[in-house]
Length: 259
Image (cartoon, rainbow, N blue to C red; front, side):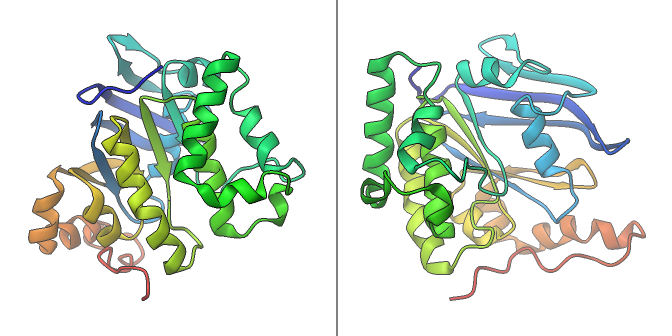
């Protein structure tokens, strides 16, 4: 399924429970084809739980996940992926004993042979470093190479939307700098990207629109340029936790990866 600039994936009033408590509370946001949308927020804000609900791993308490007028909330992961929504969860979840090539093939099991071949070719064009690693087990790769593989797994299925949870987590700055233009290239191809990221400077440098999530709710929605030009908006939303009486405010979100 090909991506088209201007497509929209709408999350409406989504609520998700995890560990016996509600961690995402009536969240609404929109991802547009051909654009990067940033979702920022401190640890514990509910971002990763929302990602798992979008991907069908967690069943929402309520709300909708709308694409082409169809609601995919609560559908099985393979149905959601087949509709063109690919998830890159936090933690670089690969099959460690399989080779890189085998991990990519697993991600194409629902595709025809021709679609699988073109998807794999496109992914390797974006990550040529993986060509020489195709016969290596995933466990033998560096963290940066593993992140490339999970991104490639998402892309081989010809998605219309990709949701990436914590792109830079645990990666050296040089690796992050390598991945940033690739995310931009993915969006320029017409795919809508939702980028969940702790480093606000990185995310806002890529994004067209941005949301801030805190306490399971959206605290800001607007243009990424508003947050770039008015960092007090970003800090204000992050510091809601401290003002609401939780144990301390998180570290400033505007910190970038160390040079």
